Image 1 (tube, rainbow, N blue to C red):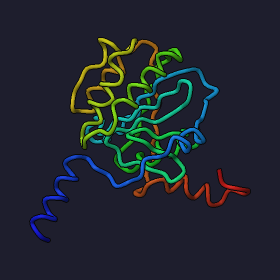
Image 2: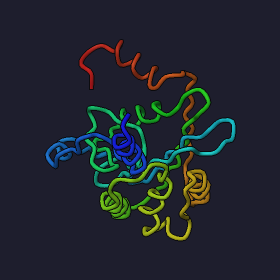
Image 3: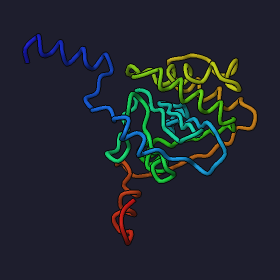
Image 4: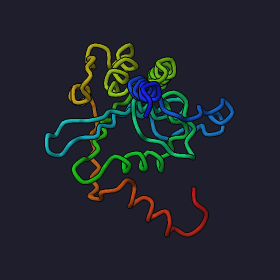
Length: 204
């Protein structure tokens, strides 16, 4: 590999660049999903079972629509329009897909849900849109940045490069509801994909 090509590869890696085409406004509008559940913000933490510490943080935002803010994440799905770090059209089935994508032997997913008003959720969504694309390994910083300006997260959620920090901060929020997802497979979404393949009728 030439030095010029090597430098380009390294630069792309360090900048967090990913080669994908951002969704168009029309694609985003078509994918819009409005959840019947009350407005909420859910931190999704990918926790190492050995250390019991979070290794990645994502944010499910449920306001006027439900979206996933997954800064510096590897998650993708061809049926989910993406722009920046936001995945649109997050139905319950795709939330389950995301959780199973990360849950595997050695890691579990912990969700921490906090009730908010629709206006608060929409403000956090707007912050996530404005934030744009995150650098690699800055998921926790990005999540904190979009949350901190909005109550009830102001003064509770701090800034850190370590996802475990925001994981701990969420545990201190009043009324937080916690749930864990475990899987023992070594692949990604094996259970989900097997169920989908054997289910009768058209695929959602």
